[in-house]
Image (cartoon, rainbow, N blue to C red):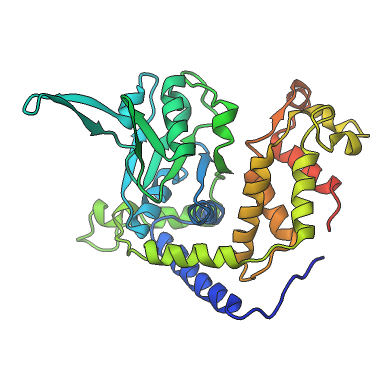
Length: 349
């Protein structure tokens, strides 16, 4: 196990300040969201990394509430876009309208011109709308008419999709999936957490109204504004990563590539496991895994990355970047099981 600590001044101070900010953020979000610690940390990770996130879970698991609450504690401009089969690119980006007073076309900007975008049920929109969002996610700009317009900074897309409903949905293209830094699977709350949710619905007194009890009405403070976010990003930048950890990351991502694709599956697939993988992850996955491993180390209060940080970040980073074969589906395997197998095959540094 690598212990890559040194005595560089300022590292522990930056890590301590970042830990304080993160604790305040978690406490503030807990005023509205019960439990769901993995989702909260994933949202904070993507925000610090400057990446986008895909949330997958059945309705009613506080995905929208968590995103709206995150936007509120940052003080950033928030917009929610409900994706539907008839959604047009102009409904996202905006369009040109005729200004009769000037005799010229003027730009009417769409809802994508915000800092935090909630793309609700993203897989319900057709390909043209997805392509418009893809340009915004990757280029941080949109094209209206013959001109491109830069989006606000920071720009953060949080997309949700329902894993159990497929009627009237469109599978997201692989190129778009690869632009999401993380994919989080939202689980059901524990019985104790669900009791806590119900207790919030119980009147606290005779004058209590439903608005008073609703978690969405609970006021939140702006504790993660631009200055605090800058502190977290600087602290994450100062987290050190050893060359051996980088080699481990490359080995993990390379091991996801089956034989014949230039990956390491040829060497590790003697048990036939790699017949379950049709396509592996690209170098963009290596970049994402390196970035998220550093942030995970920051969350643990360390200023260096350990192999455990890499393993903890591997599932949300890789689960939407692997394409499984029909054999995997026939044998009842999902991407999480395949990634777990890869983690067991690749030796620790």
